[in-house]
Image 1 (cartoon, helix red, strand yellow):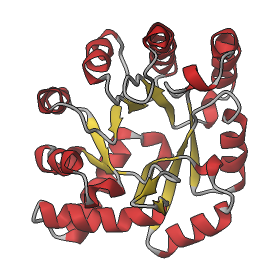
Image 2 (image 1 turned 90 degrees about the vertical axis):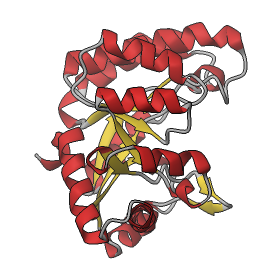
Image 3 (image 1 turned 135 degrees about the vertical axis):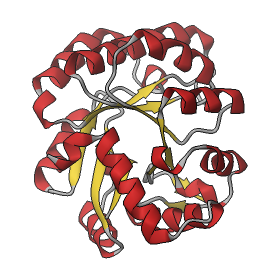
Length: 252
C-alpha cells in the first residue's frame, strides 16, 4: 500500500478521477493539507466525501502575501482547527518561506503564524507537515521549543548540514516527483535512511509541465528503490511502516 502524505486535494477540479487513478496504482490513502483561510473548510468537505482522503489543516507561509487579512483572521482559524481536531491526522501545511516570499516585512508575521501552528500541534498532539523553503535554519531553530509527536519535512531542498541535523533529530522527509530531475531531492533520498522516508505528490504542483497527482508516487517509489538499491516491494512495506509511525491517525 502507498500513502501520499502531502497533497492539495481541494485544488483539483477532477478529484474523483484523481482518486481513481491513485487507487489503480495502489495509493490507498492521501493526506490533504490545508493552505489558506478560504481552503480549510473545503479540505474537510472533500475528506468527508472520500474515505481515502484524510484532512490536515494549517496556514501555509505564503498566505501572508496572498491574504492581507490573515493576521486578523488567525484566532478564528485556530478556533476552527481546534473545533475539528478529531477529524484531523496532522497540522499542515505550515512553516516558513523566505524563497517565494521576498518581502522581508512579512517575515515577522510568518513567524508569528508558524509559532501559533506549532503551539496548536503541541496542544492537539498532532504531527506536522512542514514547509521550509529558504528558511530552513530558522525552522530548525524553532522546532525544539515544541513537543510535537512527529515532524515531516515536505520536499526538502535546503542545506546539507541542516538535512543532517534533521536526520539526527529523527525527522521524516517526504519525497516528491521532483526526484526525477532535482539534485537536491536526490541528495535527500541518498542521505535519509529508508526508515525515515515518506512519499508525496504535492499535487497539483507541476513537474516539468505535468500536473502532479497522487498516482505519481508509485514512480517515486520506483526511483527511490533504484537510487538506494532496494527491492521495490521491500521499500514499499518499509515506507508504509514509516507512515504508520509518522501519521498514526491514518490507520485508526
